[in-house]
Image 1 (spheres, helix red, strand yellow):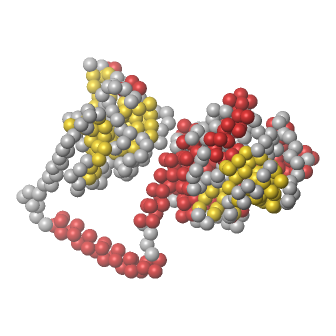
Image 2: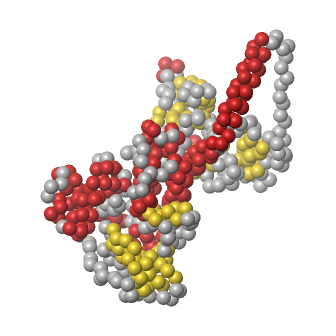
Image 3: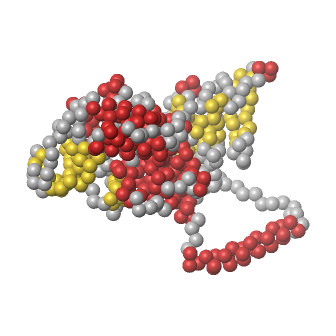
Length: 495
């Protein structure tokens, strides 16, 4: 079903809960069938909640006003009488299980500027940080957001998801109604209603949680959900913020959204952290290409003058007699205090940095990096036992083999991320890899076999080459991309 179809299901579902099942009579059969299934699922464990009005107490919390209502319950503004602190209380239609209480302990440990903090939990209510602002859903009713706002908010949401995913917490119900716009940026709500992917009761009952319009295919079918389920929902939210078709969005943003909402989870971004970095990269690229509006005529004149100058230089170089010799550039690098592996350093695409394998004084091998303008090399943490580093085409990542995996790490450091398991070369000698400007990595999965392609964000590898038995080939190795990023050279080895 399309997102629009699921929105129809959601609206009819809430109407049936408020006004009764009579509203289903004239509905489309497919929509009615799905709504009846959701209502049946809800009725299997629902309990009543005592009405709360201003002045009443819920434990130590004094209710002040109702802030909103939804399919799962109501939200109230309240005061914690012990601390004198304003809080938001969300009541739920279901009693929480002991398992949920244990999950809430992990959720309450989330401390992130873009996540609404969970303070406390009762038998059927949550006590949360009171966030001042408006929901993204309310904002979108007044019109779409700019591309710049979409990228900024999307990056903040991805950052919040990455922090939760790092603790094994999946949101499962990301939507504009659970995203607040505040003076300091985004706040993602309702992590308190999420459950971890290890929740056995959820898996055993195939319970479908979430809002239909934003559910990933595997979520609607009651299959196992993981980080990529939240990424699917974020893709729909990004598209809704721009209220535009993908073919009229900037190509980079359209590509990000397309990967988010892929039907196959393996084709989506595998980590919210990767998605955040990609959105930040788009923002930086857009900022660097902006021209101030009040100087547009000035820059037009400058561009014209530069064009004439460049054409003149080109003409001169074409017409001038060839020089007898051209001066060569030589660069000497010294890596004092380190014992190299005998492999040449890998230069960054812009030629400003070099990464190499080396042993330190304790005999431990890892990756080191240094600038061509600096005499000192710096160790990259988390790259122990690394082999054969390669650079991404944009210079934002360094790929390497280690502990039976192909990994990537930012040149500035940080936690390395696994791209692909390659256990067959664990402890051995890898046979090269190549990374193009389209986000593809070509590599052998073993020292005996063909070459495969894998996306830089991870996913299943695809076989690219086939061994030629007529030449007794036993392996393809050491791929090197040509400048177009589509063709590559490689070594074919035979027995």
